[in-house]
Amino acid sequence: MRFIHSYECTLCGAVYPADSSFFTCPACGEKGILEIRYDYERMKSIVNADYFRASKEFSMWRYLPLMSIRGTDIGETLRVGWTPLYRTQRLGQTLQIDRLFVKDEGCNPTASLKDRASAVACLHAREMGRPILACASTGNAASSLAGNAARLGLKSVIFVPKRAPLGKLTQMMLFGATVISVDGDYKDAFRLSREAIAKYGWYNRNAAINPHLVEGKKTVALEIAEQLGFHAPDWVAVSVGDGCTVAGVYKGFYDFWKLGLIEKIPKILGVQSSGCAPFVEAAAERRGLREAAENTIADSISVGIPRNPVKALRAVTASKGAWIAVSDADILEAMRLLGRTEGIFGEPAGVAAVAGVQAARIAGWIKKEETVVAVMTGNGLKDPANGQKAAGSPVVMKPDLATFVHWMDQHDKEVCL
Image (cartoon, rainbow, N blue to C red; front, side, top):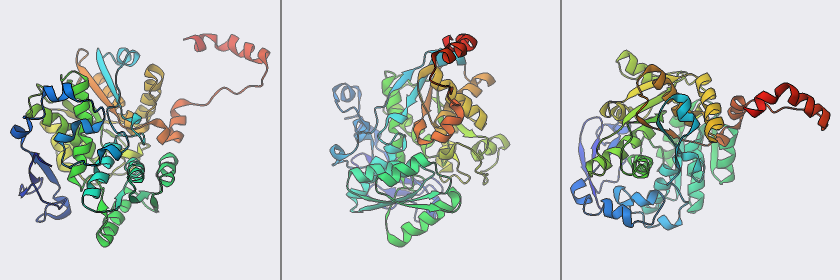
C-alpha cells in the first residue's frame, strides 16, 4: 500500500485518501466503482529495470510493489501467475500473423486468470480481519475464490447461476465452499450475493465492486510486457464479460507505461460472444450500455449487465483498440484450431480471444506484421461438455486388427495429415 496516492470515483471523479477502506464511492453508491491511483514518481525508485533483473520471485507477487495490498502472507498462497506466453507456430501461420502469442492462463492453480484476483482478495480479507469471503460468479471466479480461500484457511460463500458448468461446480465444492446454485441467471446470482454480503458483512470478492481485484488481474499484462522483453505488443485480445479483466489488462500496461518501462500501451481488442454482447452493441450503435440476453456457451463472459462498464470502455477507447463479437460456432472452431495447432485446451470464454483475433485479422484491423497476444483465460477442462462439442467423438470399433486395417485403408490420408 506504500505507493497508493488516492482512490478516485469513476463516475463523479471524487478523490478519497489512500487509507480509505470502502470499495465504492460513498456519494455514488455501488455504481461508483473506485480507481486506485498510484504515486508513480515515488514508485520509480523501486520498480525499475534493476528491480526486475534482481527479482527471483516468479509468480504474480513479483509485482507486489505495484499493488494495493501489504502482501505480508504471500508465501502462504497458491502459486499464481508467471504463466506461459507461447509464441504460436502453426496457429500464427493459419491466421497469417507473423508474431502471434497465446498467454495460457489455464496454467494457474484453479485453471483460470481469476486466480490473480482471488489471491489478492484472500490476502486483503486477512489484512482486514474478514474470515469469510463471498461473490457471485458464472464459475471461474467462484472456483478460484474457493481454492485460494481454502489454501489460506478462509471460508467462501458462492452464488452461481444454475447454468454453471459441472467442472467448475465440482472444483468449488471440492474446495469446501458453500455453494448456492441460484434458480436464475447471473444477474439474479449477483443480486442475491450483494444482498447477502450486506446482511452478513462478508468480504466482497465481486471484482466489479472491489477495486483491489483489478490490481490482481493487471498482473497478466505486466507479465506479458516483461516476457516480451519490455516491448509492448501491438494488440492484446481479451474476452469480456463484466469488464474487470479487460480493465485490468489496460491498467497493467498503463502502469508500466507511466513508469517508463514500455514505450506504448497496446491496442486492446475486447471480444464478446454475439449471444451476449452489450459492449459490442453499444460501441456499434454509439450509445450507452443496455441489458443484453445471456445466450452463449461462453459462460464466463455471459454477463447481460456488466458491472464494470466505465473501466472496460476506457480500456478499449484509451488504447485506441476495438470491440468485436464472435459467434458460438466461431468459438468452437477456435477451440479446435488452438488445440490442433498448438496443443492448448481452452474453455469457450478463454478461446473467444483467439476467435476475436481471427475475425479482426479477416476484417483487416490486425496486420500480418503486427505483434499480437491473445489472453486465453481458462482451461478447457473447466467445461468438458463444450470441449466435447468442439473435439467431436472418438472412432469406435471392435478390438480386431483386420477391422482397424480396413478402417485405415479408408482414412489413412486423414490420419497422416
